[in-house]
Image (cartoon, rainbow, N blue to C red; front, side):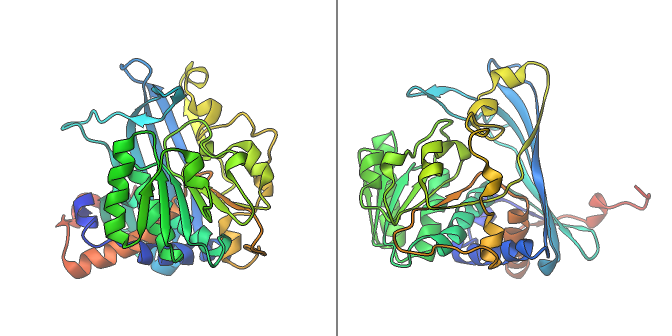
Length: 358
């Protein structure tokens, strides 16, 4: 069994290969040749004021790769208000001020645990990669200008994915901290070899953009209808970032999955956590807008639902919820490359199997 770290993954995990694997997995899921198990969260008290312990799991099985993946997080989370809006923030309180997130990769042939790896690099790669898959089917073929709201960890996955599926000439990035957006622009101008320009507002980022992406931890909308224009493709990394006015205004809406997050909380927390108001667990407009009426990305990739039909359409990929199958797809690359490159710590399999019938 291999133990693989984020530092290992960063040496070989590339967005184009991840998008290719994700697209194949979505296609198999659409054809019922793969399985995804929806996310479940257990929410309990934490000694820190306003914080909870959130234990999150999601899983998926991809027979074509012979792999099943279980993604789990053990997080201490709170919701500080930043510039008048609550943000979902994980607190790094494990030893050495670190976070806890793992993916367990199993063989569907033998059942054995093949690998265990950090989920941080994979997390932003699978979110960005899925947005890239959606943009391949929903953005205009000639899309060349990307408007990006956010300059953090998730934004790196989004810009890399969009640059993979479309020939970008200009990226305009806005985030609330000028130094962060300027550093992001400098880094990705060099990395992608295109113009990445830091701008002073979300309106400026959206102006003349062919693709508009929000990649923040905001619990309130960052993309509103006034930012959207005909021919644009819109997406985000959180359900809360796209307002109801946008969802109702677009011509073609596609969602990642219809399956909701199942949140199981101890007494009191549903009234106190913003997630239950406008986050991963619920949003106030959910009774007004039936998300299950929109097609899922798997159906578009499998050819069962059309993608963009005209240059004037406003399209939207609502990355409403994550999927465990995404980790199996990217895990197929990780395990094969780690074996080939002899990367990672090898641990005796007997520590992860048993002779007793469980």
